[in-house]
Image (cartoon, rainbow, N blue to C red; front, side):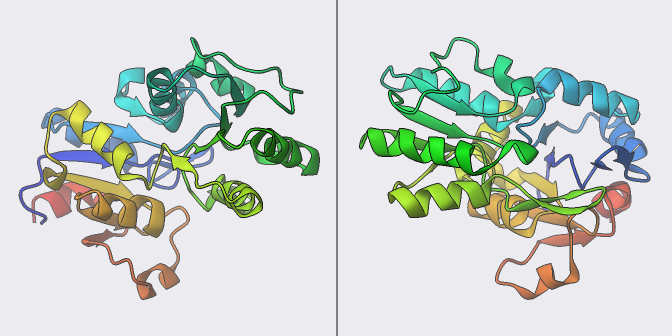
Length: 262
């Protein structure tokens, strides 16, 4: 047991469900958390769905949550953008998450100049050369434009196999422009600190439960949180042979109650 763990952060895809299939025992584990009133949040790098949709998805799997209990990069990015020097924003996100950017001045989707901030999310099948090249042109047209990454997850587990996430596209733009990204999702320490601040707990007392050895575990540890790796989702045995090492390993989130009390 990691002491003194008083709160929990849960990654979602790969921990609570795989795509449209729930992880066995996840709903029971979350019910156990709620019954014991353990402070918790759901933290995800998903930028293809809004928080309301994610709440509905959790409910289909028997997990109760409210939008305020889900922290996404879109939410933190919107708050960050509103604190910056005013400027036009170019959004590369799915239509479902655009409402999360209400109050932000956005360029038309065909603009190739005029951006002060170029925000890169997970477009999935929407990525093609033209779209990536438009992001490149927006950055090149303004030497002061900021490259903003909605997380740096490398890949995720789809029902048909592993699939690229946002990080490879951000890396391509960083390499082409020499512009370092501002990361507003996992594994950025600021993202984890925003989550622990919302819980009102110090980072060292909040355990992060995830299936991504880099974004979830190494990211949490760099922010001062213990990282608990589950053997579901994108987990591969090779994850245990790298530099990042979890503080604990569970076969799945279903083992949380037994681990917590061990």
